[in-house]
Length: 93
Image (cartoon, rainbow, N blue to C red; front, side, top):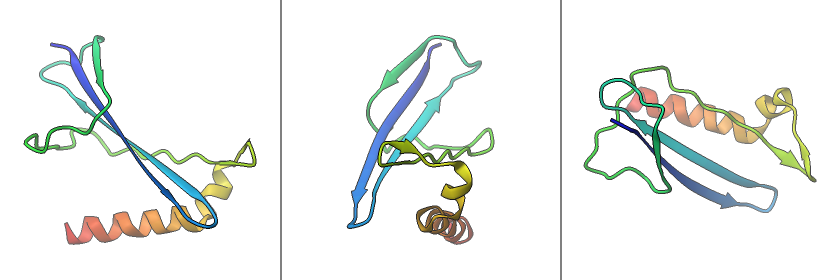
């Protein structure tokens, strides 16, 4: 059975920066397939999403057309707020 990959995007803009968040969900029934059906939308709300592998979050950034080094991103306020938000949700969820 083909693997189904949902992809959705969230964007927010402030005075100082723009944050684009890309969310990907891969749905696999049985063994993963090399055939992937890509859908540019969120998964239906009726589908319960569970993790069978560790959650992976990748953060990348561009400033004035140049990539920001990962070390700088880790120190940024945006990254720190994201980490704190995920901790709160994990504890409260």
